[in-house]
Length: 528
Image 1 (cartoon, helix red, strand yellow):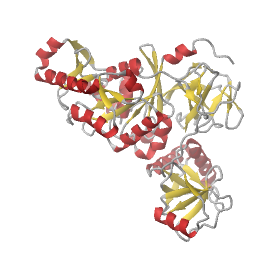
Image 2 (cartoon, helix red, strand yellow):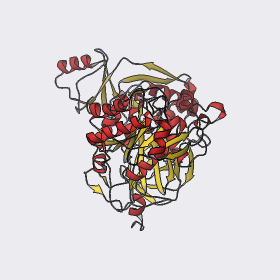
Image 3 (cartoon, helix red, strand yellow):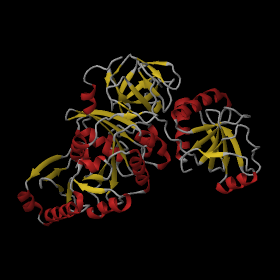
């Protein structure tokens, strides 16, 4: 199928990005504030839905609303200034890094959100390194300037000292953290003053003053903001689009997402400076032109987003060509066709039917039980395959079994569903099979999510017996030496039938390798 005219034009209108941060930096609040300023929603809710308001649109899972944290990624699409924004909110908690890393394969830029009081935190550093490795340009938004925190210059110095990024401030806070008066635009010396709305439920009104009026209104705070901004510029902090695209520098903006201040400025920068959709390299490293026939890859599978239907949605990043609802596609992994009869544009839990999509768009393929995370789809005119996702080495293990035996069938169905979605990895023994699988997780909170999902979606109360293992290795030998539980190890099979050896710790791993030099093992993930 030859792509219809306009693919390149439409791809140039797309901005697809993720918001990354440490937990509690305000990521979901910022996500909703961005949608509010784009007029995609009319009122922002608190994370817990206080005052009778609903929770943030990106935190759609009941468990997220109860705990006030993001534990699964969510996609939102809206239009701002004739630009199509595909925003993917990511889990901030380290236990859900695997989900976040998959999201980062599907975006073209990232907004790194920093808490003004805490600066760069461990999870943010890890996610930034993924962005650096993948060549994803990063914009920095320093949040919570309405609260007491650190100095603006100190936070910018941290970007240089800890991650080697040159900060390029596009605006600068007038007033120290905790006494936020507004923003000084570094290029124009214009002052933006905000009028807060009750609870930050609606967009803060903006008033613009020239430099002389700002000087009269703010006095020493205005002067200090100008001096600090000029100081950074003198050290190479002026905006440089090439340095930003190369991942050597980061535009820096300030604000307070909970009050919806500074958010419109971030949206403007994303439209003006964030990269549009670009050719993606296939598994052989060859960039696929945007106007090639349709191709894309699945980076997330989710069930239970619509409680009324319990359908399964595969999130597809469109990489090339024009997608049209109803077209027949081919799944590279199986060679089978997949009919795209039910396709929806995602907005958190809410959805609308989509008929056409272009490179950069994230769409939801409904009733996608034949699709797995990492699958490539194409129009069938020529084989296409995008690189596989990196595996993550689990460090936490638990045997799962239904509390009530008469729910075993539902239990097996639920475990298979969670495995397909990548909520947890599932290992099985040759003796027990599906009756008592071992759940393997990067972080222990994944077990809580699995138990919650089994209870709420399949009506199964599950018992989880934690296991003492912390290290997993893939067994390479076609006929491996004997392994058992005698020296603190066990053997299970993954979903592909590959043997996985589990060890209590690295000492037990080393002991086994010395005792059995013929045993060939390899990590499940790089650096494991």
